[in-house]
Image 1 (tube, rainbow, N blue to C red):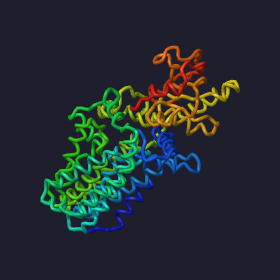
Image 2: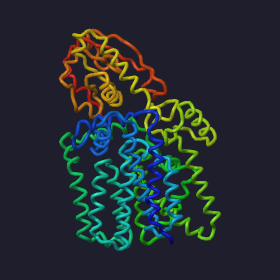
Image 3: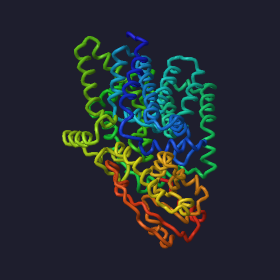
Image 4: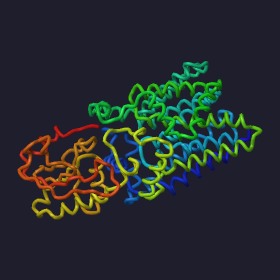
Length: 506
């Protein structure tokens, strides 16, 4: 097989350029704002995530607000993922066409493209999950056993980005146990790799332990009403949808190819073990998605072998994969205007008879735009509206006024965009904002964002409460539409005493 070692660099460069051009549109995503603010409070962990992504997100904003700089982060990880996908195709016995087709399948998979389009914990896995698989595959094929140490480093840093990689690592080990290659586990270097991963992950584990393992509470709360729990059949169907309704046969062929390969069979076992684990844990459909580049690489190898003398067939397969990528790209890359996206979404849903609810992960999330695109709207308007209300207060009240937001997205938007207006730090009982506390505010004067001055949960909490405005920014998600912003004064219970009752991890 011809293996031009310029191909992985070319695949990475094209991926990087596409994402750098397409990513920085619409606006900052709700979670991106939260990651940035978390990163500006450096810690070994946070209520709902490990530290790597928040620190990277905050680092991108050290020289001022820049959507381009922020979205360059996932673009870089996506490029790394494309590079490793090509290396996996080569390692599994493929040549230039296998590498090219695997890269095209990687592009066409909407979930992977989405991970590379905005900052989130899964973006790191685009590179590190396939890289871990590549290292283990090389060990299976006779590489220096000390490569286990590199594997441990990769898994350790991946855990510091998102905990779900631990299940992928477990699936890899079980996959090895089920094959004759289990002998490579009887090595001090394998134990060394485990030790390296554990040492890297330990600071976050200690942070979680010191704070009562809030992540467990958050996951339990999410499973008890917030998250949509997919049936096994729906979860499997979702895997086909998120990897592109037209190109999923590439990775399915790859799964079969892995089971046919003596060296790669453990990777096939790892996938079929990982998916039931995710189902049993009621995971969201995209949690195992960083494993798909492995299967796509194997699919490229199989299809290359089948079409070794069919150049026209190869051209047709490549062209169809590119067309499939372009067809679904607007759902993963923010490249269309808002109205054009609404129209295109309606057209695709009608043409394919697939409702957006098939990929809904949480209850009560509706919008004209796809959910992620909707959550990139309305945040600057929120901060400017709060600033107008804040500066309209009498000076004596303004000096004591606290801004309290209903959720971390609103709070982070006020903190991020509020620097322009000199707003005080936002307070919220939601996730890590609760840990940051009251910042010394008594609560006697509160600008309540998307709340009711405690009327529902704490009747009579304030002596005076008045609704100032309702904000209804265009294109926002359902629960950020027509949100009330009130001024509450005369608190009857000091905020410091009330604070323990305001915690909600979800």
